[in-house]
Length: 279
Image (cartoon, rainbow, N blue to C red; front, top):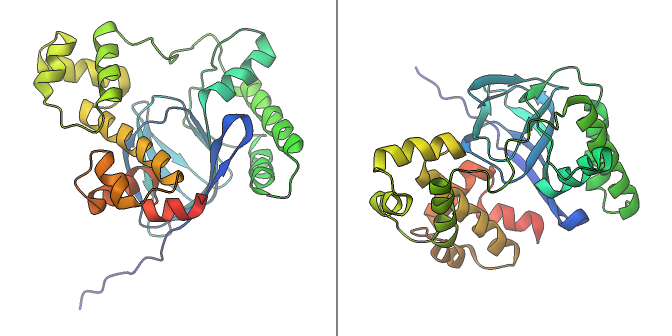
């Protein structure tokens, strides 16, 4: 007789941290979650605490084990899933690019963002201190000065160890002009249904050429880029307390179920679950 293995439920805690203009802190254990390919507007730093995270990033396959630091830079497409049914656990920081830009400025006095090549770093001397930093930032009783100092100290050390300030490949506005016009249009019309031919006309390219050029520039095809914009806007509205059903319709989703499916593919949480963690 064939039996189906029942996986434990995923466990996720997400917190909004108001320091430096605000960022997100995540602590999660995933068994079922498979993140679809997506990008982040900012940087993501994490430490694996259990299991193995497998992900594709920068045209390579990466495997992050307990004690490894996993990271993603702005605009680089990636996915993620567990190696097997044992799942994986990690603690993540999702930081706006401006925070890293400021940290790099403390070191160089030049206004630029650092570049990090790997998606996973083994045996890093900064791994244990990242776990300590995560706990400090999650502690509601901690002094804000202590938290700000701890974050800036860790980031400057990480940049010194692994950053390359000569390879600043992702400042905003570096896309070719045609792709930049499409990005601006999608940011304005993210909630609308947009035919590919419309984007091609705006770009002045054939639809086929547009698809290739857009994905080469952003790491995502236009429809997934638009989907991601919708999710970002949905997160903002949910954080403001708007009902998920209203959020779904105002951000271009067919209904709340449609929003829930797409939201979980990218964030690992349902809209209701996300709202509960931050309100």
